[in-house]
Picture 1 (tube, helix red, strand yellow):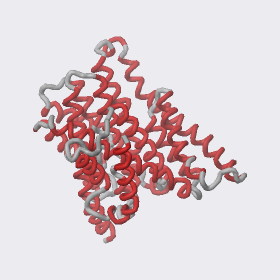
Picture 2 (cartoon, one colour):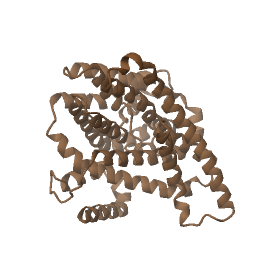
Picture 3 (spheres, helix red, strand yellow):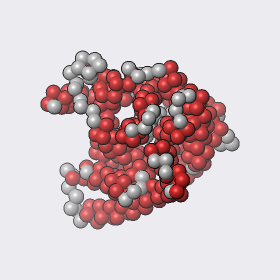
Picture 4 (tube, helix red, strand yellow):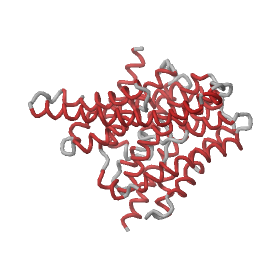
Length: 398
């Protein structure tokens, strides 16, 4: 345990002091984190012996994603969203359902041994995009504001929207009786997850922000403790929504949007520590993924898994996005850019762990495909981020 802690601590230290230089390099942070875990893990030098428990990895991924969703939402430029809300609206209401449908169709063609519900589980597990992996794009001011904010809002909400869809398919696959007598209860999960998530995110943030403001005005918040309220509020939104049966991801993102609106003047000072905490948790998550998951997946790869993973990152994502953005004031290159930057990551890790726990007959194939898609996303999106961001920035400036 202490050897692992030493390695992780020193890696966090080194990356934190070199981050400004490394973020301009062709290799993104998640690539470096995963490769570091892979090289030092059991498949490589075997000096990083992290005991990767599926439940622990899920909790780590959920907490990281919740914190990133809250801080990204709080940093969103609502004025830009107000002028170009049609972009994320179309991505969520048209592009997301089409992505699940196309993923289902391609899955039927590629995986002949999987059942209909298992293919549906795979399609919905890989539909949401990852706010953490997409951060390099949505925070880069070289990217036009309407595209940045559109991608940010999409990645913030599609996780929560996909949770009830995924759980519906998973429930039907695990319990065949549900499909008969209790189908309407399963479908009601969609409204419950979203409704409770929104209620908790908005309600808790309203109360928390008001209390924070009163205490700050009275001088009760010291400089040391000023770093923690946002971390506590974001975790509270996520955990309470999950506890009450809603979507913690919807709660975290909606709470972050409201916090950013209510605390316009002070939000950047309040968010700094939370953003740093989120980045650190993301680093640990991807190192853990590289050390404990990638090595296990490599031995189970097949041509079907590779074909579907590549299709998931390209055709299955890009075609629905391109079609959904028809009629919007975007150039074809902009639409392709939005379609390409749909990285898969933390949400899919959470879904993969749920599949593993469900003990489905073909669950191993689903988990390997999800993990392979995430790995390829880290690689492809990480390598292409800086070059494509520079290109779209130059085109926008013409």
